[in-house]
Length: 244
Image 1 (spheres, rainbow, N blue to C red):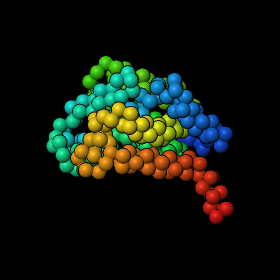
Image 2 (image 1 turned 90 degrees about the vertical axis):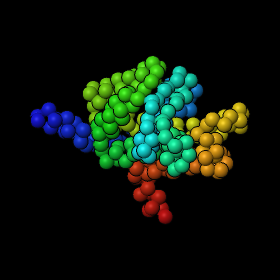
Image 3 (image 1 turned 180 degrees about the horizontal axis):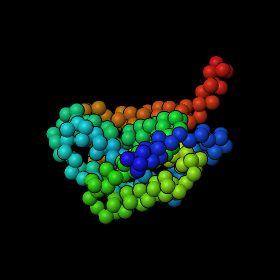
């Protein structure tokens, strides 16, 4: 019981709000990781993990049978599920991929705004553990284990301010990464004209053009970015209201 109580106290620990310079620096680090080519190739694996996790979660919630997840060295991924090839379940499963990182960033921002940086880290560990049992290739296993090791290190060895800063940087990576991957999807569709992307599969299922689905991904990313900014920088919202 003492161990459970101690664990719960760690999970529910409320951190003090970060000073504005810390917040700005953490967001800048996350944004730079998305914009700098070499860094982007590395952190994009985190975006792909959430992307494929979104597919997997949607598949399970809609009654499909999740067969496994693969992550590749080129930062792509593949989630395989069994069930009807058409219908709302398949549409929601496909829709969940590109929107998952954006929605996850908004959820992370909400936890951070309430001071639950430690809770966010424990939630990440739980999600990575659930992801681990569905991984079906060695590179994917390596990506998830490295990600888990980083989160464990921050959870157990970083002070609360650094945990919060890590959470803000990760939120920025997921938010800006969701927007970048959505924009890159459209460039890839124009260049190669493939029909295997999530947007093209949605187009085949719904008769709505693929470019419209890409627009949906971009809009979700922008809305979640705006929501995350409002949660992480509440003083900005108050200033805007006072000026209005």
